[in-house]
Length: 66
Image 1 (tube, rainbow, N blue to C red):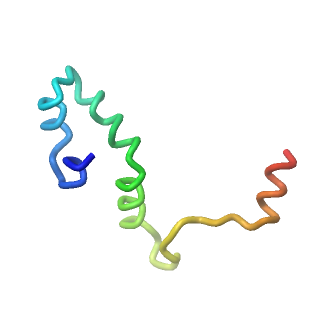
Image 2: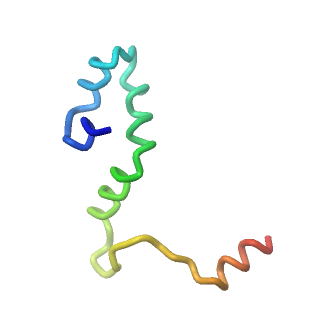
């Protein structure tokens, strides 16, 4: 994960790990929430506040009742 965070290309990491396919290495990209949050922070709409979505208690109660 540190290599990905440092910007090392996933194909290079796949070679170092001995993965036959780069797709095997991309599993780690999908698993790392920090990388996802950074990507989402870069593409957010200008009119929105940064941070995680916190649903209201009313919405949570409705979803639990389904």
